[in-house]
Image 1 (cartoon, rainbow, N blue to C red):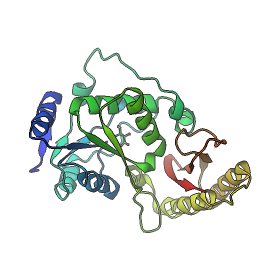
Image 2 (image 1 turned 90 degrees about the vertical axis):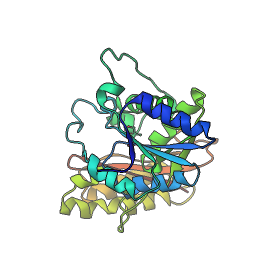
Image 3 (image 1 turned 135 degrees about the vertical axis):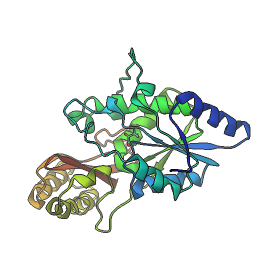
Image 4 (image 1 turned 30 degrees about the horizontal axis):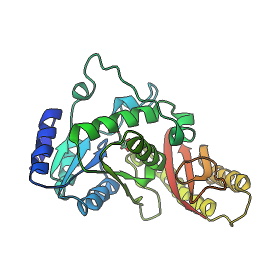
Amino acid sequence: MSSLGIYRCIDDMRAQVAAWKAEGLRVGLVPTMGALHAGHLSLVEAISQNVDKVIVSIFVNPAQFAAHEDLSTYPRQEAADLAALETTQTDAVFAPTAQEMYPDGFATAIAMDGPALGLESEERPHFFGGVALIVLKLLTQTQTDVAIFGEKDYQQLMVIRRMVADLNLPVEIMAGEIMREADGLAMSSRNVYLNAEQRKIAAQLHVILGQLANHPAGADIIKAEAEAKQALLEAGFTKVDYACIRDAETLGVPNANTRARRALIVARLGDTRLLDNRPAS
Ligand code: PAF
């Protein structure tokens, strides 16, 4: 039995945040889909440096999964998640039901342009509409002062920053650093899907990403991207969705206005998609 405050209803969660704010406290939100790992716990640690009270939301959001994706098998382990959160600075967990979030008759969608175009959207056209919708709902439901998102899902972070700016939402968005296993693999709830052989190959993603990110200044980007793709296939990845260098803010192809660049790779091992990214030269 967890000693954390667990909220299943939007009204109760909002009332708790309002009470904290009435005391002059600053409140932060860590949105998650559960199956928590050290990467999530590092987001709790990071946001807790900036706020007085931390809420972690746990909700596997149906709107961001396509019919053929892993919604039904996505790892769900609430008891273990609550036990892990008890060791952190978490004050409350917001774990609503799907019916609470998407009641009968729900009819609203969000369409986004800009950083939501390309990359993940090529393979998962439904994805950012679903993410933007749930994040907007979580932010308006909880009305926290700050929310944090991991840089591992870099395009997601840029999409959320854009939405928050476009809709003038009164919330500060923090970015959490990517947490890595000892061999460099970015931590992800989906890493549990990898078998022993795939897990060995997976470690190469980080190495090849480093080579792509550090390609010599002035070198041909298209050539560097093609080399990274070839290296991934030779390492044993079954498919490369993308290996590219983009403008770090707009996620468009770098141009004369680009201030910083980002290398991003998504490669597959069987049915498992592995994402990683880092600043590029
Ligand atoms: O990154 C995730 O875990 C999810 O996309 C998020 C932001 C919690 C929305 O469901």
